[in-house]
Length: 335
Image (cartoon, rainbow, N blue to C red; front, side, top):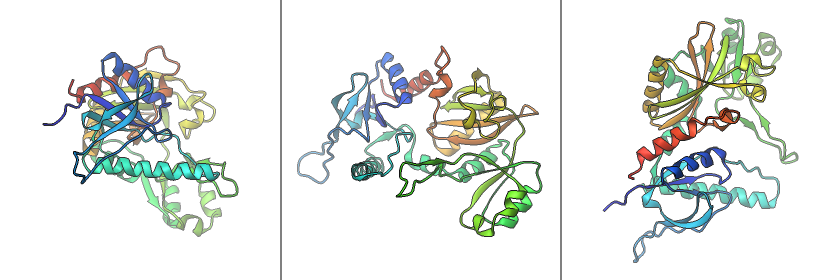
């Protein structure tokens, strides 16, 4: 007989504000949350092929006391939170921890692929969805407006594309960080969105482009931006006044400390497209970035399958997103 799925088991940091907020609301619904922290592990054993019965119980930290408790994973819905602290190798201790975390990731992958865990969102679908080329292709198929886009490492093709627009932007396909060197292992460079000009293209050698493909898009003339969190037909959206900030006009992240985040209603057409997108991608929830252009049309930029949203509500009295997560997780459980 299958056990009832009535608990939430999280693979993520016990200090992650997103996880803590959702766990708080789940507790009011009498649902327990347990944490497997990749940086602070409890004991775990999975027995396979032994004469004795298989033991699929592990120790995890129970919210809110964060005391270790024995958890039967067959009773848990599993949330693999991919936004956790990244550890860079800077000394022998961090090298050991880095290896240990990678092995812990492999252990979790093994549990998932052996069907020992029931997931909130499929790891396989989420891994596919991390790629911006896939996101843009899917968004276009769904009917979203997207910027005209070329993905290329050919200098001449890129130059011809950029010459057709007043402004263009350039961004990475996936990797958001430039890794530190061994001699300077504390410096991590964040790669954001930047404008690309014909002059910069002409001054750069062909090898500057040929080493890797990159995303170049026509720049959208924005009125403002929208950060939207959607979960199984429900959505909470915030207007981001990025164009009123000193640094956020091209990439809103540069101006977040100066920006305001105001809850807004989203057009029904956009909400319908969002639901179609999540269903087609095979993910339960996503954090979407849109621009609203001068014609008040929503333009799709990207969707993160486990993006950041807590900062949107840090200055708001009402918290809307965490209760939405808690309600949707409760609906997935057998309680």
